[in-house]
Amino acid sequence: MSTHPTPQGSGRQAGSANNGAKKVTVPDIISKKTRGEKISCLTAYDYPTARLLDAAGVDISLVGDSLGMVVLGYENTLPVTMEEMLHHTRAVRRGVARALLVADMPFGSFQLGVNDAVANAVRFVKEAGAEAVKIEGGEKRLELIARLAENDIPVMAHIGLTPQSVHALGGFKVQGKTLAAADALLRDARAVEAAGAFSLVLESIPAEVAERITRELKIPTIGIGAGPACDGQVLVWHDLIGLSFGVDPKFVRRYADLRPLLEQAIGRFVADVTGGAFPGEAETTHLPAEVREQWQSRARR
Image (cartoon, rainbow, N blue to C red; front, side, top):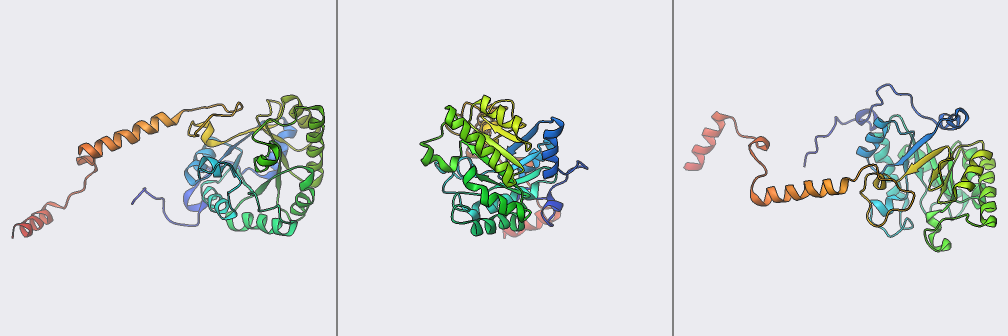
């Protein structure tokens, strides 16, 4: 089945081009906070999405373990495996030329010991082309963050609502709503910065808490349901374009609703095939006239 492939080659060189745009690096992301420039981040799980994000100028392409819910159909992110994340990170890598590529470390890839976690992070960089990894958790991840930083693997930390802790948290709930919980988030934020994280995702926390964390940290904060004061914002791609199923979280803003459009296109295809309208003459190839005559004469024998 042909999908009009690009020429074969070595991944990024064959399939992506940044049209001369400057490559976004970890120091670039950090310097954006210093300059007061907002950071854009979207999830990507495949090559065509990565191409679209890069062309639009997104700063960070995040291969999130949200893959499990929006692409693979799992109930939550917990079943996602290293091999699934590596597979999709490689696909995104082939579509990214400009954005910083960050890969989520899935549940089970860093909970069983620092040495195993470092080895798994190395796989993301070495095998899949990630330029940084994201790790959920605050103070309890300090040793791992420090080890990765020592080994030149940039870490995006993630606190607040951490989906891999869904059972411990009792569901997908806003975090940091009490004074004690807000203080704990601030401690987590300070600790991961001190350990060497280059940025910090703040998910589903009150805007006032996110604002203070953002003001106190030297590293940039990337918010998702954490208010406008964060240094940047991230959304899940499928939420952004209306291709998620179920109820959208409060923090989602749909910038397009592609689902009805796609359903209409699929319905038209089914109707055209059923009714014999596809393929038509425009989509059909014929034998050259002289060959067709010979072919037809053979059929009459």
